[in-house]
Image (cartoon, rainbow, N blue to C red):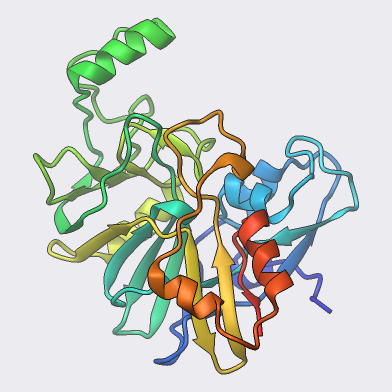
Amino acid sequence: MRALVSLLFLFGFSAHAAIYSAPLQGSRLLGFPMEHQVVDGQSLDHVAQQYDMGLLAMMAANPGVDPFLPPTGSTLMLPSQMLLPDVDRKGVVINLAELRLYYFDNARGRVYVYPIGIGRVGRATPLVSTKISQRIKDPTWTPTARTRKEWLEERGIELPKVVPAGPDNPMGHRALRLGFGNGEYLIHGTNHEFGIGMRVSAGCIRMRPTDIEELFELVRVGEPVRIINEPVKISKEPSGLFLEVHEPLSQDEELEKSAKTLELSEHQREVLSQPGLNDDAVQTLLREQRGMPMAIN
């Protein structure tokens, strides 16, 4: 039976990144399942902000729950357990499919996990292996001509060529420039809380103000950054074979989850077809795409 406890005891009384002890080599399982009891007036976004999780991750973990008015006293599943992406454990790793950023603090044996906002349809965040090229306090924002046109047509706002630092700057108070392209992609803060854990940006990686301030102090120029898109994660753990499935990204925002194509690698298909697995559990996880790991053997 899962413990019904508050992560505030673990993460502090204000929302900060989930900080995990790095698992031993051969293991990729972080955290443990937890629950939250809804209090009067809470929405799923309130709960997501309380535990520094993404809104879509909360919705996926609790299918069928009204995101605006979850019943008072009801129990929500928290996406507090996950598998590390199957990549080198160094620097910053961003998995677009799960809308999470991982920072590997190998010197102290820690893994920091943050929810992020990523590029919306038509302005996708690129899949790259790059590095941090610049750390910027109180950044200005130089919107592209395309962005200025979009703001004017969609919001009726004529942006200046350069938006100064301050409360009206959508990049917030900290930014980390990526050494890719012409330097137009950044990991940065925001002046709006809503949208973290969603596809909302023009291609940059968006973080909550407290999260980017923490990450800013952790990373250094030259730190490796890898951006991947892996909705399916499988790991052989000491306690069994675990499967974690996230809703795949799509070029069509209107598509229902069931209409999206979930692509498995050849290796993943081989692993999931081996004897001794709970096929019903596998098919349920692939269909529901709740973003939480489960043992399947």
